[in-house]
Amino acid sequence: MGEVAGTMTPVFSDVFTEMAVLLLMAAVIGAIGVRLRQPLIVAFIAVGILAGPSVLGWVSANDQVDLLAKLGIALLLFVVGLKLDLHIIRSMGLVALATGLGQVFFTSVVGYFIALSLGMTPVMAIYVAVALTFSSTIIIVKLLSDKREVDALHGRIAIGFLIVQDIVVVLVMIGLTALGHASESSETASLGWEAITVLIKGGLFIACIGLLMRYVLTPLLHQLAKSPELLVLFAIAWAVALGAVGAHLGFSKEVGAFLAGVSLASTPYREAIGSRLVSLRDFLLLFFFIDLGAGLDLTTLGAQAGPAIILSLFVLIGNPLIVMSILGFMGYRKRTGFLAGLTVAQISEFSLILGALGLSLGHIDADTMGLITLVGLITISVSTYMILYSHLLYARLAQWLAVFERKGVHREVVGDMTTEENGVEVILFGLGRFGAGIARELHLRGHRVLSVDFDPDLVRRHEEDGYAVCFGDAEDPEFLATLPLMQAAWVLSSLREVPVNLALLHGLRNHGYSGQVAVTAHSTRDAGLLQQAGADRVLIPYADAAAEAVDNLFGESGSNDR
View 1 (tube, helix red, strand yellow):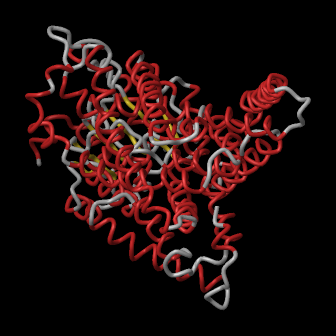
View 2: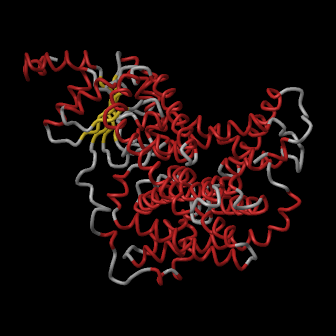
View 3: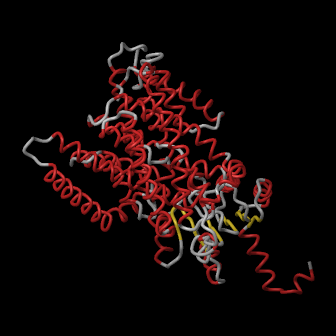
């Protein structure tokens, strides 16, 4: 991608100035997009189109933009692998697998025949059909979080089958890469032998990663976690290194980076790593979408408008209908099916990455890539408003949705989807002497506690004692989104730093936490500041301990004397 831009005469005197202009454009157009409640993906592609050869012709630093774009894609796949929570799929059970795989199958089959009817070759039709099947996990989770619906039934179902989609897209990339290398091999080399070779290499690659997971990575991360900056640096290096190894073995760099993420997903540091990489991932992906937009030829997009509208209508209407049909057949209510179905009414950044992979392998041409991008722009833009106003849409359409609901069978009323027997009552930040004492007392009294600390030694020690504990930072708003806030009646902080507790209170409020919050302070002055910020209770350890000691010494007589 970006070859056309690379042949242009540079507009700016140096690459640094060009990058500065691109970033300023991205900030301005991104602000406009946010004002219009659009995902930044749309804004960044628009930046590429405006700065590309079809309009202003400002993108000439092709090598630099392309390198940053590749790093962004590698980090995207790494974070996906890092957050590959198989427990979510197990807890969702059949609904995640059936909905995810069923939607991928039906969308790809129907999309293939639509693409053929539009005059595409079979290979191009396959790429377009597969691109239509994947929905954006990043966009959906962001929209659900903004609406505070991540923990709702339809939100949990949607996240479950989006994870299944993410796994499928990686498998598809592996297959397409192997097919591309097979077509480049000599005529005497059969496709079957090439497939066997790929399987052997892949098996050995995964086996080596498994050994590293078992014996090396967890103790190594435990040492690196003592320096958060070093932990993040290692994560980035690990993602890029395995991406390079994957490409060298005949897979793609995306597959290698994904496996790098999976290799760290079982460690207690995955949430801390993932939350700290989100901003860097989004920044680098900016260059992928700029590169993508810059590679589009506006003179050919006009001819793609008709097919793009047809395919976009299929994604916007057909994909939700497929999900609603599957969920209705499984016994879920029409409301749950409708709200979950709207989350697949767009194609994802993975669809664009898949198209770019097909373009690099020579399986599709630039016009087909432009078509996929145009469908992405239309569906992402429209579906965002569909999800934002999903409840209003449901109220208007509910009377016609009864066909998607089985009478007398409603899975969501019973079963694991609504039980909270193993839920969390208290989330405790800080496992120092004071925090560990609180955790121990809560456990003794039968409360279900999830403890959080940024000290890897404390995390490991409490894990060995059998407590539910995770590694994380109370000041990190991205990390707070990973916690089961909607289940907890109390959030307690034994940390005494006022800025940390203020950041925690602010983050909890932004995430819509409605339970009780207790924080810790050094003095009554700090306690007043924290209460003004929204704390329900403020603990002052020395003062509280002194009052309790006096009560223990004098009992009720002491109380009567006061």
